[in-house]
Amino acid sequence: MDISTFIWTIFAILAIAIAVTVLNFLGNRTKKDTFLLLGLSDSGKTSLFLKLRYGSLVQTHTSMKENEGHFIINDNGIPLVKNPIHVVDVPGHEKLRFKFSDFIPITRGIIFVIDSSTCAKNSRQIAEYLYDIFAHKNVKNIPTLIACNMSDMITALPPERIRTILENEINRLRITRTSGLDHQDSVDDVEFLGYESEDFKFEHLENDVVFEKCSVKEGEINVIKEWIVDTFQGIK
Image (cartoon, rainbow, N blue to C red; front, side, top):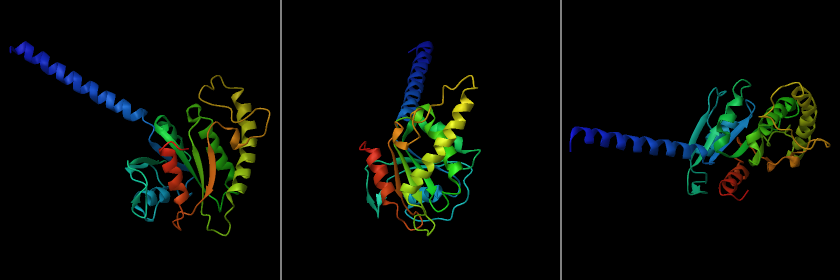
């Protein structure tokens, strides 16, 4: 083999290797196997992430960057799925929560965590975040679980009450948001929530949205595990 043939052979091998790497990367980025943990700061997102991953509670601090990992969802050491699931805990800080959109192309399901003991006083902030999520054009049809955490607290509201509070808040917010959109040149990335002629209801969304109570502190998260497994396996 002369030197020129040898060089072209090396180039061909490198080109194939690069092509395979790129295709694998693109394939991983389009595979919807990710579950997002979203919510305001101090809602219990990170505690839930750690509980799902390690099975125990660890003291947490306000996250300034994503926590993510691939791990098997299990129940007392018994695997509930065969393959690891990618879970991403997105910071709840107001200036960082927008990062959820980076993961939407690979998202299988969204878990939005709420502190049900303080939901009433934080309803506006929660509604604004939920509005940003559901109004994103690429979030349509992504199953969503509203996890009403801190259900063991005496001041905790039941999921049905939380649902009503947030529907009313989003309905008011929708009026102001829609009015603002009328004065913008481009709204390509924003969807109108619900039906224009009716008050907002979560059932009007194209997403399957369910509300469930839980308590990460007390280890009462089986309903979340079951929802993740069912959604991952395509049951939801």
